[in-house]
Length: 79
Image 1 (tube, rainbow, N blue to C red):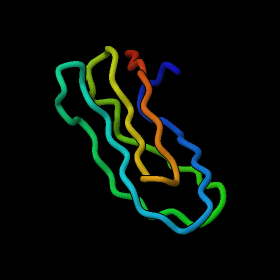
Image 2 (cartoon, rainbow, N blue to C red; image 1 turned 90 degrees about the horizontal axis):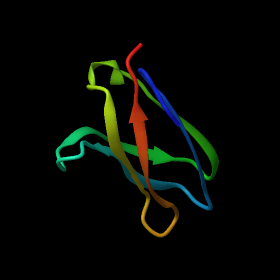
Image 3 (cartoon, rainbow, N blue to C red; image 1 turned 90 degrees about the vertical axis):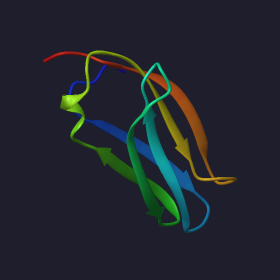
């Protein structure tokens, strides 16, 4: 789970769907937001540019409505 500058997320959906990927700091601030449209089946999404975040614990929230929803803690490490 620890990451330095990027995260790879795999999502499986039954139909074409649109949703969001968000990363929150511990104080609730949104530090990353991306709207994504997925094709049916398995999709791989690379989240880059995270090296600027301070080391610590963040919340990754992936929300594609009824198709897919996941929230988990992620850990940012220094290089």
